[in-house]
Length: 254
Ligand SMILES: [Zn+2]
Ligand SMILES: [Zn+2]
Image 1 (cartoon, rainbow, N blue to C red):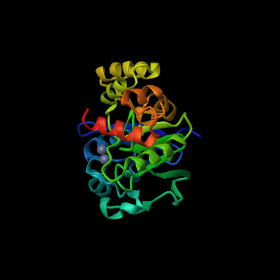
Image 2 (image 1 turned 180 degrees about the vertical axis):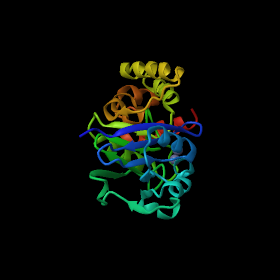
Image 3 (image 1 turned 90 degrees about the vertical axis):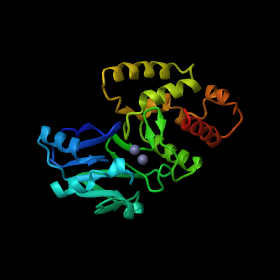
């Protein structure tokens, strides 16, 4: 069976929406449409018809296209059941217990709260849409959760196989890499990745997707156990959550 086709759609200043087209069923979903225009243009370019609108969380830069795109296409809006009142035009609320299918394809929903209290990820086969929870070399701000809760959410994502592709909600990768290097300059994989990201961004090329394996090797927020990071933070004997919390606090003002 031909694989899913996944295309990033740049929106607003630094957001990514994603089109997911299944050539077997001709269904097409958009993940986190910030605004309708770029999504409609990308659909037209491919000749795809929108069947589903998926939201990882309620923030406007992830849902601003819901209503106009639904009106134009009749697409079904699918998002976190626990945030029903904050997702515009929601039709189908989902959580980890829901058996949600995209045509014949079973899609896993992971509850990964802390950026918002009901944030979810969608996992299609080997592609995870992580919204504003896990970024390339970064993680989301803690608007509605504690460091402990975010660490649990990130640990849940780390249980996905290393080859899982990570499609995140923003192009923050270069800044994230620069912050990561302040904590772990001795990490060779991180130095190489940051060089690669600099080259991509100077060409205007997206840095998504990454993979869970690459994130585990280079993303400081997944690496609170690193001796070098602990030394940099003067937290050698601390627990993982305290190290994570200090990194998140420093990133807030980086
Ligand atoms: Zn957000
Ligand atoms: Zn966002």
